[in-house]
Length: 448
Image (cartoon, rainbow, N blue to C red; front, side):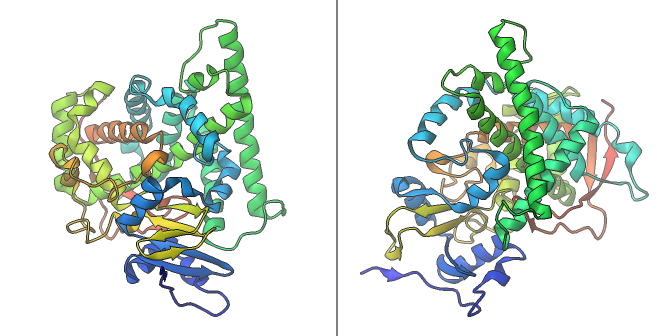
């Protein structure tokens, strides 16, 4: 006979809603861990389940994957991101994944490193002129600009000027901040004319108009055999089974997901490097040896293992997406515990990737865990910042190449240090961010 999943006690009316609100990722991971790795809790009227057990990850995302679909959290985010690959299930997902996959093959991604390096070099060029009296510069806004310009160039083949990139990035970031508040708290229906809902609808309209103009213009140019700027978009348009609306949804999903998660991961990486000078110095030596003053290309990435390890260790400690949610289509047996039909279960990457049962000194920043000779020994259910199983994020290689190239470009130019008294604080919106500000002291190393 199956046992009931342990319950976290809470308020008779609110349940654990007040506990969830400050930082939901810590509550979910901590609650599961406190009950042996698997627990249930209630937020108002909704009962949720949480796990940090690797065996549950394998069961839900690999062995019994047909019994699970994406949870309701994803439907909220799709208001901005559209019904792209990230949000659909079943046969539709399988067909769409086959259509989209060619754009993310190794050969298709070769330009990404060079694009990321070039765009980041342009943005960071004036850092010395913008330093405060303590030599520090606020980097979060610049990292968003770099991520936005990189994804736009890679996806659409076109550039965004500084003012347009800033305006666009602020709109998308603002909308995702609103969605974070909705996912972590009590939200009004989307049709109600609240200030947050109006901001969401305005951002969606602006994003839809901008991207649909690009799609229609590119389709017309390709039909007329005109020269085009390239980009992943053209692999979508070249598929006759994808309508303009399908292309819009996929483009929006990649655009919004790739932009915010990249900026967030970069911010954590720079903060960690600034706080660990011995790691930063090893990265500087690697960059100097491999690049010798030039910008990184795809062929350089394999020779930058230390910087790649920094990117991966950052994603272990601070995964931009802290958990994945699944809804059970039928009752299931989770290692002797009963998960009822229709249940939402949250798999906490944040908790699993910091588990003392899986990692030595799990709270410590140790990029050497991901050295090439050690990387293959890490179980796939212990480290999965891009998800796991067949629903692993299609853009995982894109993201790692982008992160490595951008970090290499910054470290090639600047030495990083954390100003005294600066502390990175975890703040969960849609992504896990180091607060709203991150001042880092930069010292020029070499001229471009």
